[in-house]
Length: 457
Ligand SMILES: NC(=O)c1ccc[n+]([C@@H]2O[C@H](COP(=O)([O-])OP(=O)(O)OC[C@H]3O[C@@H](n4cnc5c(N)ncnc54)[C@H](O)[C@@H]3O)[C@@H](O)[C@H]2O)c1
Image (cartoon, rainbow, N blue to C red):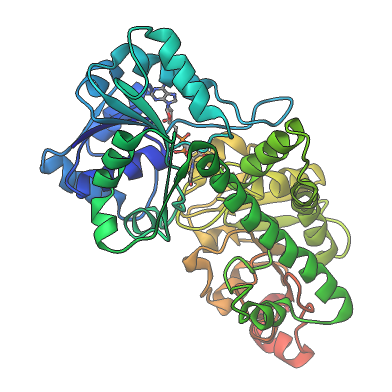
């Protein structure tokens, strides 16, 4: 089979590369000429583990190519995947569908022979039907069912483990109009390698499929927000949120995942998808008040994180040097969209702190978004002369810091770990005052402080 993927971002590029690995002939199209030029040179425009190798192998095998021209890619395709961005619209927070609709119109003009148009972008209920209308209006000579069909096939991959998630997903969701048997067969054929692995496939209607994606992301955002609020309660009543999470997560009905307390969810999906679901539900006259609360709690939580750092430093960060480790919204990605750091770091600067930050992959993007701070070459140089260390993202390389080296680098002895990647006693034993989420703060024992704290203890 041959497909075109419109939009070569985190989802389009990974999906295109993975489909080509399945043996499908894929052209990945993007309007961003620079992105396509880099891909043609063998450079990855995003950081995603394993992607460079997967792309290189499939380009070499002649199954994967890149282009800025949509028309030739669509003309020869059995299916066209729309994988463009659907960010929050300014003003009302609903999904901005302008990129999806523009792509649909361009696809319409390029269709030559029966084509399945697939929305892989996360799109609100009703978008698939709207895409069908756009195509029919742009090309009155085309007939739905005979010349094209529209299918919803939301993507559930996670940045940082995107290839594994695409190749071995928990499920594939395919939503079609009831009469679209031809489109369903084409989709099954494309996903045949996953059928062979006995991946659950949910074949359903267009609207249901569109809603599944929003319901899934909002549910996960609610789960994170739930444990975050329990974490705050733990701090006040002297409980340990990690143990509460373990205690509830072992219940099969609850499950262990997404029960890690932290600074609030961020990223390119949860914030915008929760907002879009809220808008869809309100517009439909059936508000999802639970998700409205999740959005509001999470927003204020991210803002409040700077105050935690302030409190750990005795009530003020003015004139203090703060080392920040981790800027991306999660590890193993360079994606900075809606990262908690974008709330926390500017608030610290505004309160008079000097921030020196390091992130293994996110600094290129961070430099565009976070100005007025210093960027370090590595984790230890970010710590030089710092009064406090704040860990914002749980990159593996921050999980095993050499605390005696940290102590030699820092001027102060305050650690604020917003990802709970250390055991409080371990950091306190090294001479630091350690503050995390949902657990009691740990202070260094005076005699240990003198030994492990070095000159500044
Ligand atoms: N990033 C994720 O982890 C993730 C996971 C699941 C679903 N999604 C959804 O997938 C969609 C894409 O997300 P993303 O993170 O890959 O976005 P992205 O911003 O990384 O990539 C979108 C790409 O589309 C291109 N584009 C826009 N309009 C175009 C057009 N008319 N023709 C050709 N190219 C065009 C842009 O230049 C950009 O490169 C969104 O709806 C998102 O919600 C994202």
